[in-house]
Amino acid sequence: MNRPLLYLVLCFLFLVFSGLGSIDRETILLGLSIAKAEEGTKPSQTTSKGPCKPTPPDALGPFYTPNAPERTSVGKGHILSGVVRTSVDCSPITGARIECWLAGQDGSYDDEHRATLFSDKTGLYKFESNFPPPYMGRPSHIHMKITAKGYQTLITQYYPAHGKTEGEFDVVLIPED
Ligand SMILES: [Fe+2]
Image (cartoon, rainbow, N blue to C red; front, side):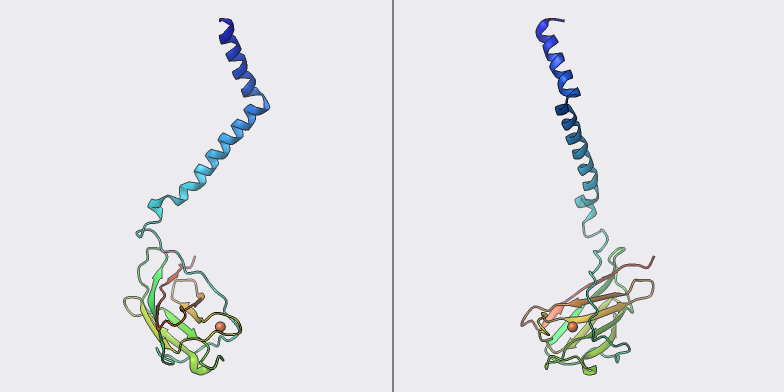
């Protein structure tokens, strides 16, 4: 082995076995672990054919009361509609029980602004009401509680954009364990 080549081999061995060499190994291992963690977010797993993202839950609030009357309208001014779906494959859920409650035009909750309705055979629901006023510093919202056989109960809220007379809100439920 000639002298320049010997120097190169010695330098290589020094880098591998010195602290600098160990940093390089850690960097390589870190890169490999990040690459593995990213495996779950490949575009092929987030296409429309993949599972629907479950609707985030929201606060129940202090004004829920059970057994609201069955009706699809409690006023005029805003129509909320959407489809109840399963997170398994986005297919519609028929007969989901949807309870809605909101503040009336005077800003207070009462029995006149509560309703129970059901999704139809295509998963569609429709609920008509006054436009919910902002309430105690909170933005306009409609409370919703959705129950369906074989699925986890979802409590959430819909936030209509200011001045809108219609809104769409698909609801995605998670199957029970
Ligand atoms: Fe509320």
